[in-house]
Length: 404
Image 1: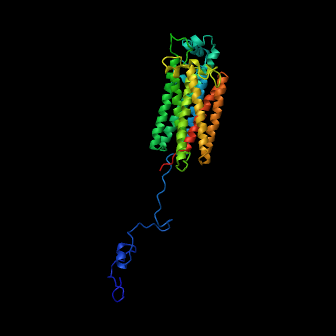
Image 2 (image 1 turned 60 degrees about the vertical axis):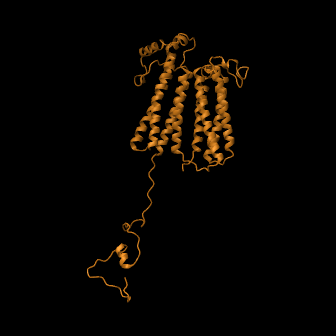
Image 3 (image 1 turned 90 degrees about the horizontal axis):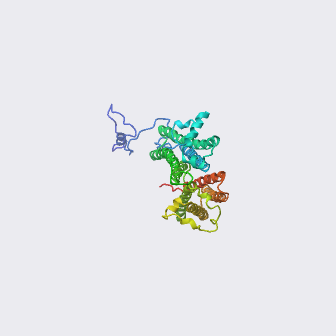
């Protein structure tokens, strides 16, 4: 501090020199300073503290790829189950053991013992009473392949889930979803045996061909579709970034239409379980009319009326036709409406792919009906329903709203 005469005031001998930049130095030198800050060591990259680094990704791409692989495994199980149903192989294994049945019969004696167990149940007594051992081996291996594939699906979910959980790659919301998926896989296996069990029961008052309950078949297929959809949706959500689309009224309507169309496609695929369970595809093999009429006479032959929806083969086929036509119409309308909205290239590809698969699926369905449900074509038609549902889920993923 300068004295009145302009001379600098001296310091007392032995007094410490105030450090530059401290509050004491500011008082002695008259320079205003900011509150003290921590000085970086010499040679650091910057003199100012850097912004905190973003946290590492909680979900590595491997998690999303794993869920996509799991959804593909579930799709394979659905297709294989459809072939098993079409070849009438589902009732060949008359008991259920989680580990014991993993080893198939090897010797002639073991095969004969397995065949004798099958001969005690209604399907052999009523439908296959002249079946040979070689023919039995074919249907047995079909059902065995389906059950073993189901075990592979369960391991594909549970083992990687435990690994990712241990590595800390799953966030808290994703942990709950993964637990639900693993639980649904286990429930699916139990539901499959519950379905098969319905076809092994003696029904003295019934003269129909022994078959599993169409209600349990629909529940088994429905839970598989839920498992497939949830796995595919979660995998796409983790791997595909959201588009920053302007939230216009037209985009909101397109998103609503996509959700409604996906629900309609899911319902149509589920109604196919009732068609398969009642062999309703063999009732009227003509299109677009059912026989000589648009609406058949036996549409409401059962009493009460509600039974016709789930138990009358004519009504079941009629409902599946109506749902299929409605799904195709909804997909076409969705495509035409999307042409009015500027969309990213990937989203446009999803809309176009949805329409293309819908056209293919309609052609497969009509061909399967007119050709009296050949097994290869019917299995392809069932696979097409999964492909159509996949395209709809992909479009929904593309139209996801960016969180604020």
